[in-house]
Length: 193
Image (cartoon, rainbow, N blue to C red; front, top):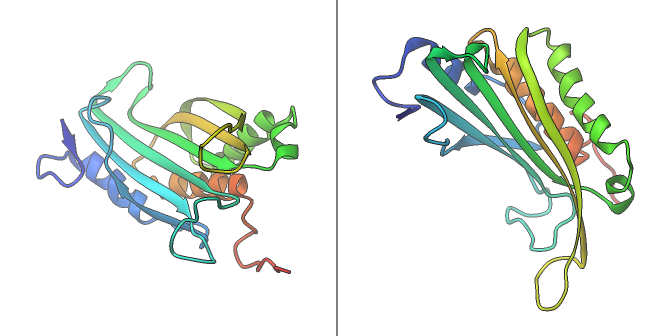
């Protein structure tokens, strides 16, 4: 099992990793390599994405609007029948949302459309797109830190890119994270009272 950075990496995997590093995402999102899963494919690479907190470099204990994600690249030189290819991207996004949004019965459909639209807008052919969207509400009791009520949106998806040029796939992932986090469009400044 090899992760990115090994001398034994096949050229298509290395090219895919390099392309992921060339992506440009919303300026409010920070990307960086993270430890990939080790048993899903012969080669794997992962990036983590976090929404930057403007007020401080430290994530506050009870911050509003926390959002993060990870995008995992899997590569099997022999291909995988379920993937319909040799590459597979696996995305996970979690974002805090307000109560009214969490209770909206259309939230899963809207969140899924963010991903589909972001991928389609980049005209990158792909296969086997699938996933789930979950909206959860939690109530804390007793001596547990955090707000008394919390609401999250989780999106899990995977798809098979048909090329190693993955920058646009990372950019689509970043766009969905920005939507989920409620970030204003790039170049727009949010006014605070």
